[in-house]
Image (cartoon, rainbow over all chains, first blue to last red):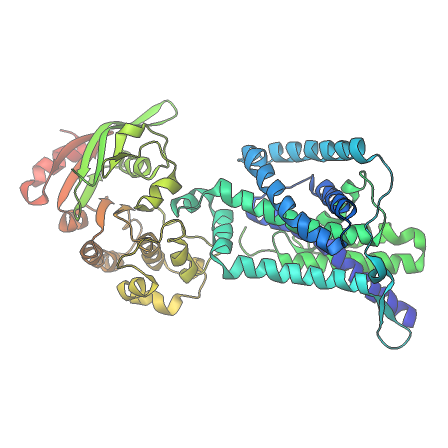
Length: 289
Length: 233
């Protein structure tokens, strides 16, 4: 019995990581209907940015993250302003093709610079620290921090969306771009800020990705799939739904692994398919589309 | 110098020419009505001023500045607010949020604020936290006008604000116009309801097939003149 409870708790914590992968994707889709196929590779890129900063400056990974945040924001802003804004329009194919190309470019550029060697981020003694929950169950501090960060990110994004003028501008632009322009909103700028924020979330996700396990330049697309599944399970454009989606995949994976270690990845995908069959629009679809 | 002026304004939809050299003037504090039959180019004229149609810089002037080639957001920031045809409220924003977004690009000092808009349209006060989609057409039109006023514009452009509304609702909305004028905002009104338009306007331009067919103060125009300018002799 304790084994199962432990499995589910570990799954929920793993779900925090998937929710962090997915939050940036969800944000971008919600605001500009852009499906970013390069999202997974941008997570890996952010992990390398943190790696270079921590190794180069000899600082703690969390300091590395703090330094990576403005870099990733600027990168996201520029990427949207100078590349992706040009692909937005009535046709959904150009952004798909361009972000698919972006994914390949990032992966190969990282391979060129860092080779295919596995890397990891070093969080020091925190990595092995744990908290006893009573019974025979203990949870690692890093997985716990991952989930706490995921919840904090979703809370912060919700606050931004529903309690600030910038958030109103995001929602207005998402509803009706030409009318938003009539309110004095510069859509290209708003989209660029949104992508900057999405890549800041990506950097947070990258920290936990890199501390949890090894990474190399080729793992981006698999992260993209988990992120996609979390977004779709939750319902497109719903941030809390994205958190729920991440947790569902996380729990399905650990439960699958508990039954048979070979089933871990498969169980996550099966859970996704089951939700898709039962609730094609996700668990928390937006009322307005 | 006029506050807002169009000089030989033209507009195209692809190969189709909708406006053929429109010259109009709006003085500070004035209310001007643009009347005319369907497809006379009235809405296109407002869209061209608001920057929604690409045009020549020299064809629209605000206070001595050529603004004809600016994007809509830049024109709004200079003080021209459009109440678009069909209202176009933001469905995922509440009534209050729809009003507040009206001053996103420009928050000039002036008489208009959330409280002033609620005082102008008291009905909206109780609905402020409701999604804008749950309002009736007339209430939505009030929000759309309020939203445009929130930036304290120098010029308010109203596109068919009576379209599809019951006469009693139209009367409520038109009752607000004198108070908007008293606040110092100049107004251009595009309207199919000629009676309403002539009642509130200082001057009228009648459009016919993309050209100005008649202009003048309502008092100086006869029914026959308007009839001829409207439908063509």
